[in-house]
Length: 401
Image (cartoon, rainbow, N blue to C red; front, side):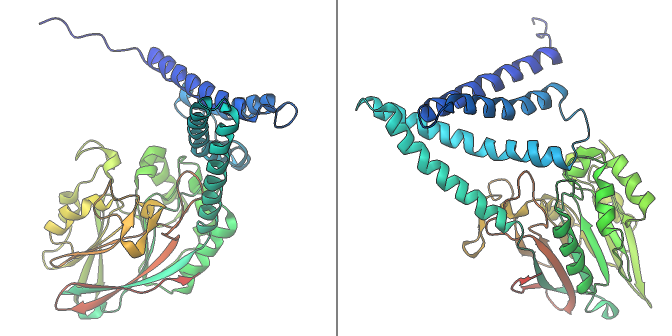
């Protein structure tokens, strides 16, 4: 057998990525420049300047595989967020304009037809983004009641507030986070579960989270588990910051037992698949390890950021799993039961039942990328447990928070 081909050096791979980025942006912005040429004085130069402004951050990010500095609020608002909006609009406008130019060549009006195609595309896409932005601010509270077989009598009516996918960072509006905090406190829960993606992409953002949510309290405690973004941001640093600031009880493949008299229920928190396969890292899911700490007859409530873990949890006797991760796709038609997340996860939103096992997938409270939500609103969820002979779920209409 011939020897294996040598691996491409990282520097060369980075150079190829950068070259492809430059070619893409040059082509896309070139089409846009040709369409706006003549609309106002210096139009191509304005497009060129905008193209450079939107391309340089990508090259920096690709070169260092992340920001080589802590991106503060101003940088995220003035650079990162415009970049994200541009990456959505640019391919739509440039491709539609290119199609128009190709059609217009047959009539000797390539630029005019290109503008006719690109203009409405830009208007519609911008309108959708504005609607999505407004939707990301429409915080709601939702009450979900679960009938749990074999739930101990003393825990009948237990109230859990679930916060998920906050994605807190310097760019997150403090006024919105304050509303989340007030909504949580107003529900007077017995315990609070922060089920992953506490921060967006930097461990330093735990400090931002702590300024708002450091006062969160509940009689039975506040519990925190990692999500995929917490893993990407560096879970070890995040966990140290959470523990140092006293922001809650961290559960990573661990259990916490709650007792009322002789009754016991177990709370378990899983790792996240972003941490790799079992044993690959501390944050990798290890359900067996978590369940090893649970008495045989205890009712088990699991906090698992990724709902893909539910089948394994259900097969091992977990009564209720609270998940998130999907954001409801950030674009969904709930009344039709459709979500943009469905091609990636079977259980992407709402409540699910499999025999005696229950799952609730929160649409999350924050957002990823840009502030955008159409359909699934940002949510603070109140979960109430009820004694029942069979598993059941009742999801109440959401109320404005």
